[in-house]
Length: 229
Image (cartoon, rainbow, N blue to C red; front, side, top):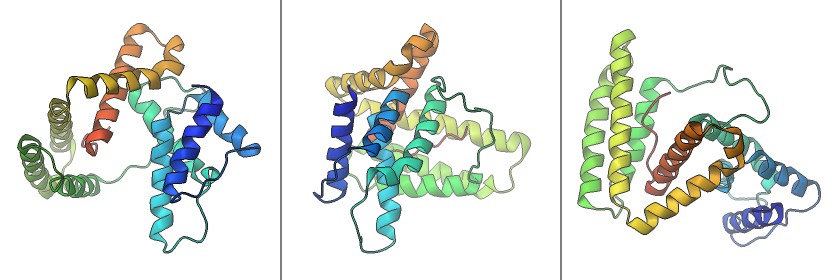
C-alpha cells in the first residue's frame, strides 16, 4: 500500500469516528502519518489507537471539536510497540526492548478480562462459544481468589493456566470461522508482517505471521488477552 492510500484509509476511518466530519491528512500531518507507514505500523494498529484516544475523549463529556489524527499518535505508537513485541518483528528504531514496562497487577488483569468475557456472553454467538466463555469466567473467578497472595510456583501456575485458557478461547473462536474468513485473516496477517519480512529468518517470519494471525483473530472475536507476558 502506498503512502497516499494509507492516509486515505486513515482519513476514512477517522471520518467515521468523527460522525462524518472529514479532516484531510495534509502538510506536516501527512509527513507524520507517512512516517508510520514507513515504520510498518499496520492500519489495524492505527485504528485501535484512534479508538483508544476517542474512548478517553468521549468519556470527558460532549465533544467540543473533531478528533485529529495527530492527537492519536501516542496511543498508536504505544500499541505498535506492543504489537511489534508480541509478533517478534525487529525494532527499526533500535529502541531498548529490555526497558522496564509497567504492567497491571495480576488481580487487576483478572478483573479486566473477567469483565470483558462477561460482556461477550451477551453477544449473538454460538452455544459452543458461549459455553467456552462461561467455563473461562468460572475458572478465572477461582484464580482471582488466590491471585493477590500468589508467589513463586503458585503464581507461575496461575500464569500457565491463563496461557492455556487463552489458547482454548482462540481455538474456539477459530472454529467459528468459515474457510473464507480464515483465509482472509491469514492474508491480513501476512500483509502486516510484509514490511519486516526481508529482515527476518524464515522461521521467525512464520512465527510472526502466526502471532499476527492470533491477534487478528482475537480482535475479530472481541476477546481480551488472558495470558500475561
